[in-house]
Length: 264
Image (cartoon, rainbow, N blue to C red):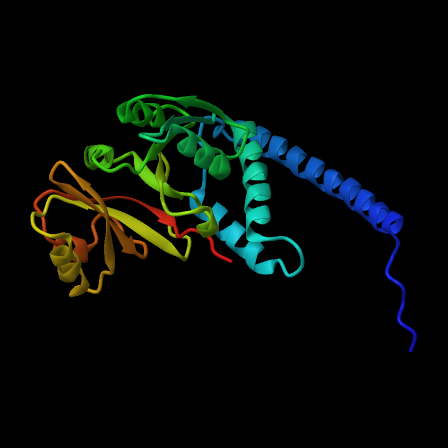
């Protein structure tokens, strides 16, 4: 059998041009559907509701990453669909980001854009409380650095309507967890999640981790400041979970949950 010669460069370019035209047609159709969704929500009286659904987004992107079997890397898939989702959210109503970056504002902005795309307006602030205040406005998302020596996350114990719903970056290969996203949004399980839990329990973190493990809760310390410790729990936990009610500390609470960062 004679091997077939590889296609010419001109033939390959022609295929790319044809694919580009088809991709644009599909993207255009998807964008048009986002407009239809916005009109339908307005007609149903839900036009003022924030359309952000973090768990649904996570399940979708996780499925897409698993489905790719040719050239689409996880990074390409995540960036494309984050932009699609970003445009859709901005089309359906107010959507804006307020970023407090701590010691590395540029990194926080980069992570915010990687997670929420280019559609929402973005404002930087110099104090975490300003980002939390903005997250309580319609369509608002606060992105706050997970900085050593700052316990802005402890404020969420007194803000039951605000919750952490995303850990940034959202793709493991983009680096370790460096910021968290907060909004007045319903946090639901996505099937592969981590929960953020705060306690004022004194003593070493290892002792608290051990106490939690005896109740079947796997935990690791993220940061601590001002007498408070922030732990990352493996799995999705409700605010009133009995196992956490028995955990060490007088002032404790779940302050949110997020899908585990996507991995290849």
